[in-house]
Image (cartoon, rainbow, N blue to C red):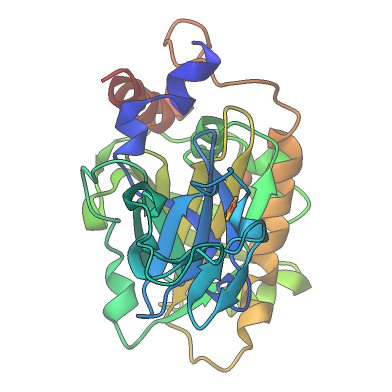
Length: 331
Ligand code: FES
Ligand SMILES: [Fe+2]
């Protein structure tokens, strides 16, 4: 498949993509990249996030290099000022009473905040941002981490997040060393929240660094898990320990362009909220780092044609995701 197929896909533009942490929208405008295009984000005077192409309609200055004044974005080049919904409110060079040119307003794209993240959709949204039930469950707390840039095509990340056969190899430095490399037959099913995937059980190593996450001091822990996808590129993974502790992960892979992606994860868990959030997710971050190192070794785009890559039974969830993803991309 060619580079332009994923990046230029109208199907992908019609979905929400996580591009930043909500916390990053303080002080200065934020520049992000999605599907090969640059956008500027800021929190407007009405409190809503504004997202627009990162190019001033006047002389194409990057607006992300500008400044914020009472919720309005000032272009750094000639000082045009943009307010709520990207409306141009001021052209400093114009004499008093001269109206702002109609095409001076920014052509905003859909922007939303959910789960501590900023999401944007460059087209007409075909589906809402996936619901994670734990968000509204007071037994659970949510923990966010930073949005990272990974030098890998986003589809390769989704493929990895649906795959458990890499655990005893890639994750031998964290939890994977105790796992039987043989994968039980994968039975695909509808999972909670409209995700589609499979359930499985693993035995995970539980080193000192993992204890804040697992809530256990045993050397190994049994985990009942599930991993599932929602188109285009969202993966939800759940981990349940014998103690009843549930650890839910939303893994967001966002194509900046054909070969670079944003990665972040959101955790919900029903612990006693005593362990500091940073300690709880330190182990998840170490696991993510192992995936990043592996994935950044893979060059170029992930072939979407079924026949190009050799797949086995353990790849069943990813193969099904790839089939549906290719359909969405190709329209
Ligand atoms: S380029 Fe933005 S005001 Fe001139
Ligand atoms: Fe992994």
